[in-house]
Amino acid sequence: ALMYLFRGQFGSVLYTGDFRWEIGDMKAVEGKNILLNALGDKKLDLLYMDNTYCNPSFSFPPRKVAAQQ
Image: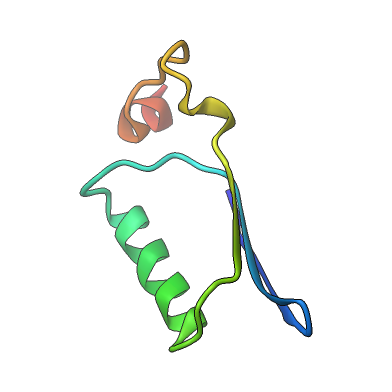
C-alpha cells in the first residue's frame, strides 16, 4: 500500500490507500516514522483512511505467513 500526502491552499490531506496494520510489525513502525517525518510539525486537515478490508468478515493470515505462501 502507499500513502499520498497533498499540501496546498486547501490544507493538508493524507490518503492512506488500503493497508494492513499489524502492531509490532517493523514495516508498520518504519511507515509511521516516515509519515511523521514527512508531516514535521504540520497537522492534517483531512485524513482519508481506506479501511476496505478492516471488516471482521475478512480473515487474513499474518503478513509473514502470507509472504511464505
